[in-house]
Picture (cartoon, one colour):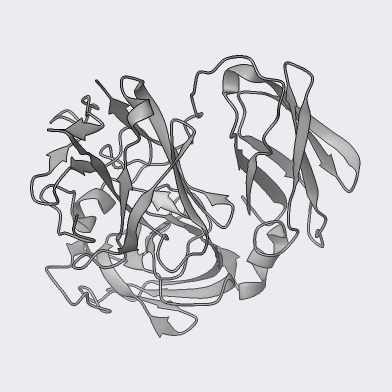
Length: 357
């Protein structure tokens, strides 16, 4: 099949970035027989503020077989969450740089664990505060999580009572402007390309910057000036049809690279798709951001590792990345399951697909 193809139906970045709302991960669901083995979870940690650490992970065993997760910091147990959980938050303050151990305990008694890297920006929250100014509310435009990956689509929200600019405007075409209706965003003094500006929200393409804290300066159309810092780093994300990071993926299936079928209806509800079409395998075409140029990319559907036949930048949508994934035959008839992309151990939001017969 072709490696990349323009979308036949896909909410253009301008459209789905207009309706950004906070979202939360959907737990991975998979059903299997009892097992005595234990597969270490994939770790992703990112700070939620200058004083808190938010550990996040992806289970690779069925949730129904996991009893709990025990959380250790520097060898000491600091918390415990049920087997259905995928996050743990702790207030740690500044000057923090320890590592965590996420211990998975199966109902069978088997255990396994993952140790966090301890490397910034993912387990050193106060690195967020080193860019100068106050901490700004900057998130990935597909998942609404932090941090934001370089060369991905980002959204910044105004604080309560704050106005980023006095105007509302959308980019009309390519190339994207760096000055949109008198509004500019500078990241480490580099002008960012803009999709959409408004008093409460600005959507832009994060320039290629090094991971860590960045300085942000927003110049509004009527002299508004907003300064602060935010965090950049690996954070893969999948666009969803609901445009909030949850629910069915904004995706299509194709067996020949010519005819494409949406995996959701006009109400943005998942519709069943088959793993084959006329005897040919079907490929799930996913769209995300923060996926390009990343090592060790994996896609799991219903917890199963799938073959990725293409991964790269979309040919015509700035900041949008495309993945072509073959649907495995043994997923036939499983119903609605989660889609998760991971790059070098960092996991995406949990999108969904309904796989029929």
